Image 1 (cartoon, rainbow, N blue to C red):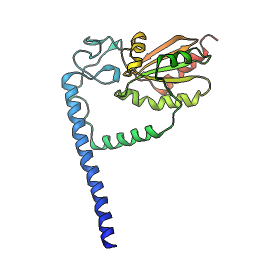
Image 2 (image 1 turned 30 degrees about the horizontal axis):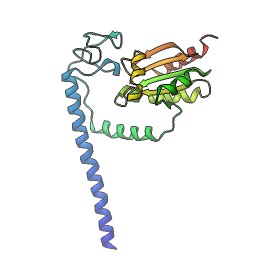
Image 3 (image 1 turned 30 degrees about the vertical axis):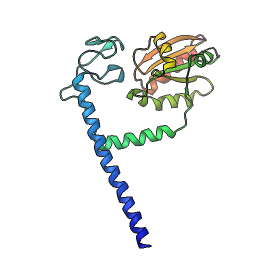
Image 4 (image 1 turned 45 degrees about the vertical axis):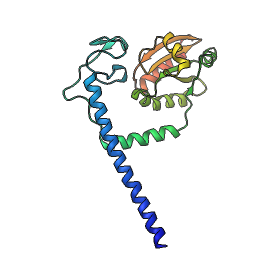
Length: 213
């Protein structure tokens, strides 16, 4: 019995030690990645972050062609370093988002999207990418809008990195993520690129529903 208790205690301590060591190295990796992005100038304006040098997507300087807006220079000292607590909270947020049910449909091919656009309901199409931090932060707004306008507006999303959707992404002129296209009767009524607040999002959906009435 004592041996079993000792083994259980040892296993528990090893799990805690593994978690601490893993979080420490994740923190070091995040800091190194942040420094490399700052030095190489690959932070893109479409992600709502500061950048220096040319835009990675369109190659322009000072005025990013992807976002059609002026890019602010990087502040002295570079971007804020991610701490250990940021990694821990980010891991739990990702885990919670993965198990939370959503009414936003994931479109896998162009035929599926065309069927949705031919329906009577307005459709909000989100072009996103797994690596996009702003796309992840907008998930809670997407879910809230899909819940609020359930049965009135259809919310769908497409992963631009999927091979079956790359031609569709280029055809719609998507140069930055996230890109939102607001459809009604098969036509694009409004386009929004980048992050937006829930209030702005809500007004855009209401305007989409009232369009043509």
